[in-house]
Structure formats: C-alpha cells, structure tokens
Length: 419
View 1 (cartoon, rainbow, N blue to C red):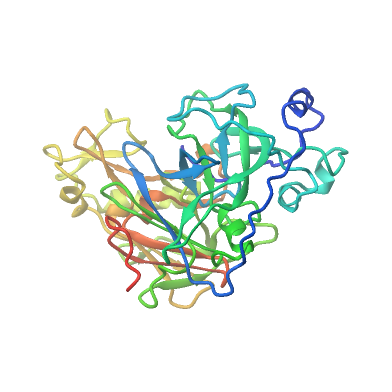
View 2 (view 1 turned 90 degrees about the horizontal axis):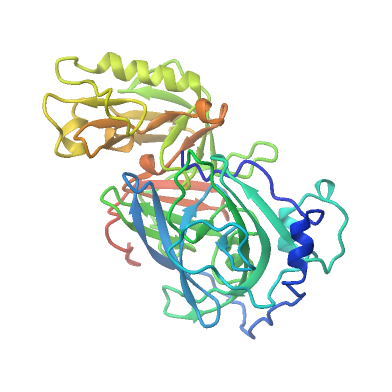
C-alpha cells in the first residue's frame, strides 16, 4: 500500500537526543520577506505537469524548484496530508534513495513561535519549549512510512498563469530521518508535496500570502502523466459536479461524507460508506464489509467461460485472466460493470467509476481489481478513493467554498484558460 493518508502524529520532539544534536546545526534565523504587495484581485493559478502512473509506478510526481539559487526536487503529490517535506542534509541520519541530493538548510530554521509550527502541534501533546526553540516535526502515514525533521523556510519560485513570477519563502519539512517498512516500496522521489487544507500546506501558505485562492486540483491521466494546479484560474465555469466537503469532528481530510455503493446500477446493500479522496493513495480502499460485498457482486457478474482467476499473478490480491492475454485494459473492461457512489448528504450527487477506474492491466496480460480491503492494512472503517479511481477526471478541492468537484477530462494536455 502506498497510502500517504496522514493518520498519525505531528508533534514536538525536543526531548529526543536528536533534538539536542540538531539544535546546534540550526541557528535561529528567519528569511527576510521580499517587499511584494499582496494581490488585491485573485484569479491566478500555478500549473505543474505531472509524471507517473498507477501501474506499474504507483504514484504521480511533480517537479518543484526550491531555494536560492533554485534546485529541482521531485515530490509525490498528496492531498491526504498537509506538510510538504524534502529529504535533508542536516546531516542526514537516515535517508532513502532519491533522484536528487538532499536539500541543504542554511540557517533558515522555523522557530516554535511561528504560527505554522503552532498549527502542527497540539499544546497538550508536547513537552515544554521556548518560543525561540526550533520547530521539530514527525509525520507518520497510513502505510507506516514516516519522516522526522525540522521545519525550515526557503524560496519557492513559481510562475503564474497570468505571466507573473514570484519566489515567496514558504515553510516545509527538512526531513533528516525517513523510515520505510520492509514490506513497502517507497516512491523514488525527494519527498512529499502535502496538499491538504491545513495551514502548513503549500496551497494554504500561498493563499494566506494573497497570491491564490485556496483551491487545488489535479488531472491524472490513465496513460500516465497529467497536471496539478494551485489556485482557481483554471477551474471550468461549468460542467463540474460539486459536492460539499463533510467535516466530522476533528477530521481534516477531503471527505465527501457517506455514500451508498451500487454495482451496475443495482444496490449492493452497502450504505453510508464514508468516503475520503486522497491522491497519495495509489489504489482505492473499502472497509472489509464493503470490499467483500463488492467482490461478491463482481464475481457473480463474471462469465466463467470468459474470465478465470489468475492465481499466479501476484500484482494485486485479486486478478483474472482471459482465454488469451489481454493486450490492453480496454479489451477486458467489457466483462465488468460500472460502480457508483451515491452520496447521501448531497442531493443527486454521484461519483461514477467505470471499470477503467477500478481495474489495472498487468504485464502478464491479466486484469486485477484495484480496490483493496482497507481493513487488512489498518485503515479500519476508512474508505479511500485513490489515484486509480480519479484517472482521467479533473478533481478540484475548493477550500474557499468547502466543496469538491469532478468532471471527465483530457488529462494529457495542460489546461486552457478559455474553458
């Protein structure tokens, strides 16, 4: 599972030996802010091309330039967490293989009194500190990968769709200790681009500085690649299905609330399934009850003369083979029916999932179910719509209006401002 869904901790770690060691490395220093004026009129976006696919790579990455002079870094895009972090030479305690050399901090540590640091830490859950202490972080994800480090601030050069360019200093994690379980295959990137709605996310920071509206979106191509955008300049004025973001107590994720599950237009008996959208998860995950009901519906619909279990294909837990190897996914989709998530807190709002949105075509010429049992990987009753089910859709997370939108789209070309 490559679920970058942030489920566990972000807290201060001053009591660790590491903190004492790195305190000498990071002197208290804040970058001076350039003398820009906040835009009085919003309307610009930043558009980034994406590289990657669901299978076999398993993630989509964006190239961001960081620092002065700017250096490129590849980041795994993740709407399931807030904090952006890069592997960091501070020095590096435990760094994993990556495309570029680790980021090198230069006296640009963020102090604990910084509001972004405060947004990451609960006062009740961290030890004593002073306002001028460095702001440490630890983030652990649902797949039990983690990053430990310190917050820093550095320039992020970006070019807007209106032609202007800026390089605002933004806060991100300088990760000097990364953990990856032996059972996981970490993305070959330099870190994570957190696109959640918390104050520490890059989109929230750009919005608070007055450059863009707090809107983020992506278009993941089923052929590989696609694009990511920050801001609302490229959001179409029509043709989008909008559903409100549902907040449950302290829930911060992009949740669409409960939905009923249909297969081929028919009820499966699964109702009130709470749904979260997460670009940091390769596949879609349903809780055990929903997964078993879905798998049962699919198997009942399969013609045993056309498809049989591909028990020797270990690409995913459930795979099928035809009388001869499938040349493409399209060749196999005619044997499967579409899924529908019908949201119960929004009138007449449905997310349609064609077979292409829940199947993969393997290198063995088989097809496998890209919806997995989340209960088996520790997600409990959490249900995640991952990359596979968002392919060839424009997906928009509008934190200004607290809504999520989607529509079919050609993700193979960058957006036009005229749509």
